Amino acid sequence: MPSTKSSAHWSRHKLGAGLLLLLALASCNAFSSIVHDDEVVAKVGNHRLYLSELAAYIPDYISSEDSLRLSRQYINSWATEILYADMAARHLSEAEMDVREELENYRRSLLKFRYEQHYIADRLDTLVTPAQIAEYYEAHKELFVLERPIVKARFLDIMKKERDRDKLISYMAGQEEAELAALAEMAGKDALKYVDYSAEWTDIVVLAKEFDMDYEELLSKLSKDYIKLERRDKGDMKVAYICDIRRSGVAPVEFCRERIKDILLSSRKHKLLSGLEQDLLTDAMNRNEFVIY
Image 1 (cartoon, rainbow, N blue to C red):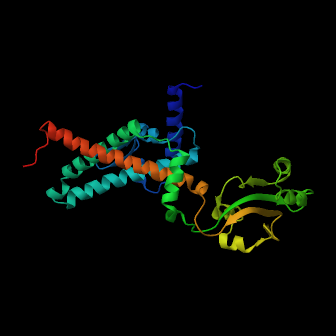
Image 2: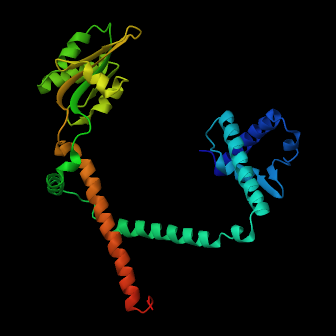
Image 3: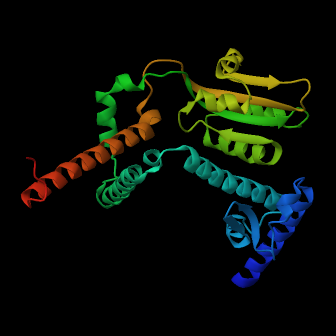
């Protein structure tokens, strides 16, 4: 493995080469005059951007073309920020230029956020049991009414001329483990793509993306539990076997599991932070650090 020093040297060398190309392409002759001894790469007024700063932004592993593109972006962004600041200094009043209050508010907000993250990480119970999920689901079923159908399905993308195409398609309707194992094995060898969505409920949009169409168009092609798509300008055939479908009503609890888990964890976080806020106020009052007159 090359040393850090040699890697940095190569990065600077590649970046330098990219900047030379940039200078060659640039129409502005003034730009080339600001590069001195491979150190200063750009200047705006009294502000200078050094090669070492630019090199820290450019990854070592990218091509010279990408290095050049990122160099351009960084230099333009750096220059724009300085030009904006200079224009603001010329046109804003002294009061408008005073950002100390905003900076202090932002600093406090950032510190609050960071401490809250530490507090939650130390105290949040992330275990959500099946019983807790079931209890929440039963109490809030109105939140889980389906907006669109969900399915359990198998998807196959196979060349039209594949010898075992029809056999694979018939296997998609299989119920026995042996049939499904044979399907997976054959598809692994002969199909362009095979995905088994039959183990759990899946949003119909996910399946529709396999066919590159919207889900309503997809469902219009459903016939005897199969959806088949053959395009004349394509050499492959896409097939889905619909094991089960729910078009409306309340989604089954297993489909809602991750959403319910997120809801419960979010509620726990909110309670922790509310408790933290109240504890801070109470503690400060007890120590006479917080006094309301």
